[in-house]
Image 1 (tube, rainbow, N blue to C red):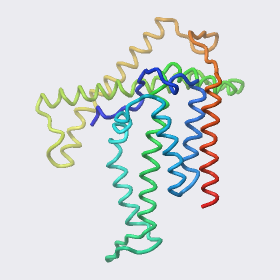
Image 2 (cartoon, helix red, strand yellow; image 1 turned 180 degrees about the horizontal axis):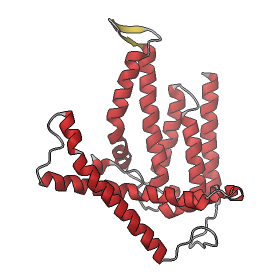
Image 3 (tube, one colour; image 1 turned 90 degrees about the vertical axis):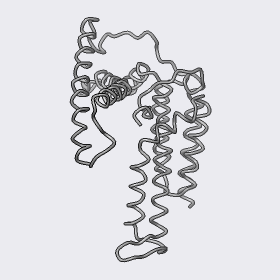
Image 4 (tube, rainbow, N blue to C red; image 1 turned 180 degrees about the vertical axis):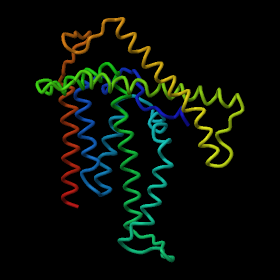
Length: 267
């Protein structure tokens, strides 16, 4: 299960989406999120799904990577959908037994919720899949640069976000190693009662926290040894420059957003 988590990973490739300016990709991701929540109909979600499929095809990243990113949250989505079916009582009643009632509106809300979140995860994952952590840090810092006039620590915030994203795959790999080591020592995480499983998790959490703090301390020491002093006066190896393809991609995203809004108004 842990190997299926791909949050924060970067997959280098030579594609149109990879070559886009990371600043534009962040803006397009925000517009994509607005697009998904612009309406409640299946047609609006179909617009977001078409945009997501188009972006995935242009990114040249295999569909199975997106399936792996969705698999870990499917149990939570199914439980939430089941609760919506039981407790949303509007619409036509299909089944009624004592306090349990299944209605058309409950099924509709559950299906739309699952589809929306699946599309949201698949589409927003493209941001980290196609953008290196360094480029993402520079893009966030450039987009938030007007806040520097208000003495807001823009560079520090961007750096923390980048380090957090970069450490997610590392901590997942570390967790997998700890679980394998504890199983070799006789620990059981898949059998027994829920309380026993919860107690056994302590043998994973404590080494994981120790490892995370050790890695953070080593990273801080390495940055100090390299005389890292933050964003003021800092130069960049690669300067972010926009190109015509960035504006075309942004225009396409805005067009999809406008279509979703118009569809929501008309339906």
